[in-house]
Length: 384
Ligand SMILES: O=C(O)CCCOc1c(F)cc(-c2c(C(=O)NCc3ccc(C(=O)O)cc3)noc2-c2cc(Cl)c(O)cc2O)cc1F
Image (tube, rainbow, N blue to C red; front, side, top):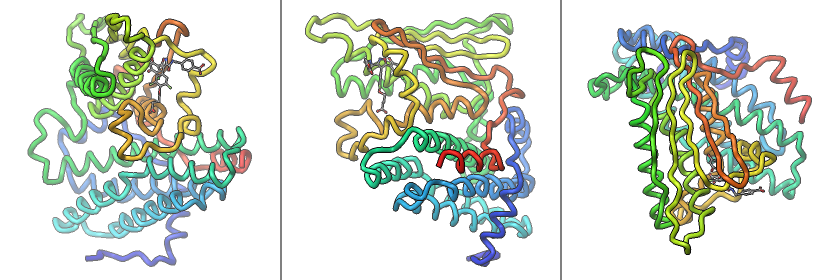
């Protein structure tokens, strides 16, 4: 049942209207404080404005993409998903926060989340289609603008899914099964537990493919709050898991492929160091996987570099440690989303350290959101 169907003719005007607002970044502290005493009406009134603002901001950038990418079948598909979702949220622009409307809003958000579940793969396909039309020769300025755009598109997508997940977890059916969690946030996330979880799952894939996997050693140092261990922080466990799982897969692949199996050597273990400082929480994964030349480490964060022909579904189980090649750049976006980072330090000939930096204080862990404005649109005009 359409609530207040938005006239299709008014969509361009609505896009201009909502894209003139900057997205409002929330901190982890704000997410937790609101979620611990959550009011569905307030959340509804905030989201029916903030979601169209975040959607409109990124839709304006999609429209600025170079034609050879924008006109691919896959990118047109992604663009139409955004248009449809923008239109659906706008139906609640003037709706009364009645019980029925709040319930309908919740299910609309779930539909939108499902509609956008394949955006990353579909965009990867669009980049491949564009490379095919350009016969593979994409100049460096085109690559730079695609890297800039995809970082902003996926950061925007992470933020929109965070808002949707918080609302649907706090006010949807799963409300009662929360325990200490506040939506998708854990106020006391045990970092070494997430490390072990990600390691065990990456190890399972590694054993399946290589029949062998490196062991794990974890060390923790808490220089703050009375040295208490284990180190806990307020974070989104699924985000931390995503980063760790990706880094463990890469380390395991490097270690197993670097060490000659015939000599039946024991593989050197992966060493994880977790440190709580005043400003940062660091999670360092150190491996002896032979490392990569310093000149190549930046390439690992490139979407274009790793947009090899996508593994077909049937291939994925044969080379499970390889994905779409987007694992590292998107993992870094998850870290940067709350003002953290992922840094790669490789010693060619020996091994690689990957460090995840998180903000130690939840009031400093603010969302990092892309803003559509004259600067960003100039960037597209300059490099297209
Ligand atoms: O497909 C995906 O999604 C995963 C895409 C990604 O796949 C990779 C992968 F898992 C591991 C490596 C790799 C190598 C390697 O491969 N060393 C051998 C070589 C030597 C020279 C050169 C060169 O000269 O260019 C390149 C590689 N050494 O260290 C790492 C390494 C990389 C990361 Cl990000 C990490 O967190 C831990 C690591 O140990 C490279 C990958 F690319």
